[in-house]
Image (cartoon, rainbow, N blue to C red):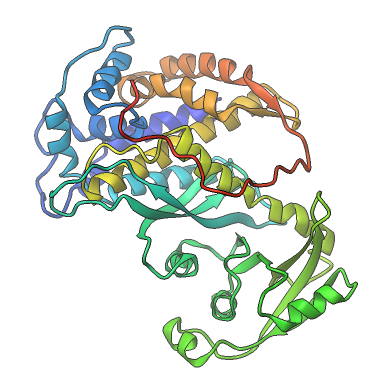
Length: 421
């Protein structure tokens, strides 16, 4: 728990640092956050990172009540003041905080390794924001796509970005985020990603990957492998076409990959494609469990949408929507680290998992004090100790190889006509 206490203290100090204040200023407001106001930068960011799900004024009054550790709401800042302050906040401010948090989690060894590699899952999800019709400048679109890079072990979102639904698709989004990967990363991808140019790009950049290939894909080598009985096989994929090679600056030559057969718990035959060719270091039997780690990003999107009300936004502009999404991702990452610490401190068995929804509920009222009201490590430690004990008592049983097929049809979305109370 001492690691988590220090993390919160350093995070709070970073919010007040000169470096963060400089980076958080919007380019249109170079002198923002210079004077002392009722809503300074640290307080503004702490409010947003709390995960705003109610009306703005209700969230503000609840925040200052939690900061004073009292039950009665405190009206200290108006929603108009909040809107004016957030307009001066750079779009890179909160994502930069998330980068700091993930880097600190790496330093504090929250992120495990698989055969010496850090697992990174990539995927995208459609989001439907609850926006009303407006004529504000740079108004946000209701339908957008959220693309994310996710660390399955600690359940941390490494990076995320919003995209227009009319852009070129998930492969393009991944291509734009490849600079966020390091040589020690192993990229986990679903069956919507395999194509000739992407495999060439990943091999050219020495990015290790494991992706599922659809049995009905256009690769003749995959169909031939499915007809065989081999557990794995090294094959050559055809070279990318000339146009793709020019667009994505990849080599136009055949790519050497390894195909691995995997059987799901339900008996379905699956093919996994990887550039981990050494069958001694990476035997075929380990790839099924490895690919299953990718499911964490699906759970993260569900948690963000339904637990943190990702589609509930507090502004009409694209800047406000992007800030809300980034803040809720940081909020989810903080509760993931808290849940990990609660599981480790209570020495829970692997068959028991911490309830992340309860962890978020327990953490939310304490965030104002942890980030703004803490003066000594002793006070932070006492608050965290009580909270971790509560979270460790709320667990569920994890069943290995349990599979629940997706139901076809439109996914349920809450009505956005009314805000939460």
